[in-house]
Length: 169
Image (cartoon, rainbow, N blue to C red):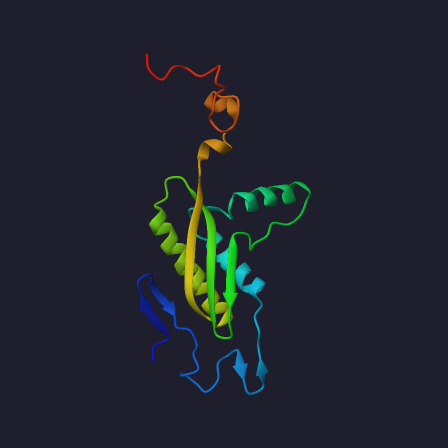
């Protein structure tokens, strides 16, 4: 049998299954290896962040909490925006991410899905049954630009209601 499988997203390493040998790499005659959900979530989070076009991970509240954690000197959670279910031989992941403005979201989702599947299957030996991706927000480059450069009073590009020029003359 081939070591890779072609699917809609490309070629990925084939997951190890019981049919290939009498035991899987996680369950052997000499013992069982258990991989915690948090480990798989970190691997998925890191793999998703490697893809160009992913600005951040997590829904709005999770990102706000992460910002507060950063203010007090805590480390960033690599599993932020990731939830996983891990069985004996299979795993599934749900990802919440923020895309960079201008990136084609369907192509980004396919690349993230492919990278996450490759990482989990390669590092954990688990078959990935699904990777669901939810794009929660789009990062606008103007938000990182100082207010003076864009002519507004805040970094968001909004000028105060009293300073706004008419849209039509």
